[in-house]
Amino acid sequence: METKIQQIRQKVESAIAQIKNSDELEKFRIDFLARKGTIAELFDALKNVQNSDKPVIGKKLNELRLFAEQQFEQLKNSLHTAKKSEHQYIDLTLPGRTLPIGTRHPVTQTLDEIKSIFYSMGFGIADGPEIEDDYHNFEALNFPADHPARDMQDTFFLAKDVLLRTHTSPVQIRVMKEQKPPIRVIMPGKVYRNEAISARSYCLFHQVEGLYVDKKVTFSELKGTLVAFAKQFYGSNIKYKFRPSFFPFTEPSLEMDITCFLCNGNGCRVCKHSGWLEVLGAGMVHPNVLKNVGYDPDEVSGYAFGMGIERITMLRLGITDIRLLYENDVRFLKQF
Image (cartoon, rainbow, N blue to C red; front, side, top):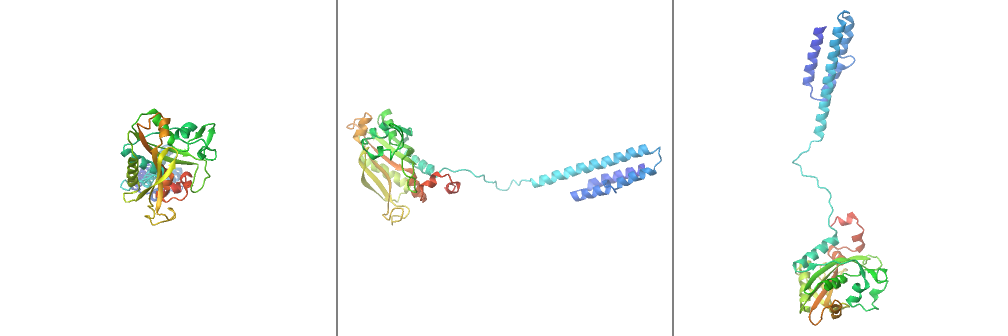
């Protein structure tokens, strides 16, 4: 009996060494560890062994069964680990998976490009508070007391003489009060208007205004600056024209039009079939504004200009509804 036990152990060792997959492992279990397997048959034969030899033979049988079970479990775990590793194999030669990332908002893209152009032209960047007082937003900028913009229908007043700025021009006043000429800055930022929200208007939008004050600043310099900007921003082949206009804080004042880049000046719905697009307003700083900040209009002069960023963004990207810029719809924003 002991010899037979030794032979079975050798068979177990030989069978374990040849197992390569789970099917062969299952066959091993059936052959040796099942109820009708080889080891179970040896236990059945134990009843035929003399009583004096049963303790020794029984111990050897238990050791054989324990050995076979341990070998089975070890191999089972080994095959499971190998199969799991096979599924987790990473081919390092494959291209990486691109993770979704955000992009700059279309308005931010336009604003950054405008700032970059003026920065290259020698302009600095100034900022100011969005909550303003009546003096900086209107009075210092030569708005008369009865100007419509000072009514609650057009302006968000937070308290008496305290409001959300309606343009970035108040920053001009603050800069000129804090600095002496020469001054050459642009002032980007948010502004607020009490307007009905529609496809063409919104209660919040962005502006970029520019200011240059020094001795003997001329109207020709203003026009040259605007043309240089327009050719960099809209393309060197554009045509442009200046029209007289009126703003309380500049005199003389103008508006700049460029050929519609959507229809190449042939006329379309966006340019109202005129072939021209209004892109900004500008003018020479009004003498009264210079006086309000302590400058002598006989000693210094300057020019100012301003443009709406949302309007430019919509024109360049073919966006027809300004509300799309503020709804945070990823389906819309990821196009840009």
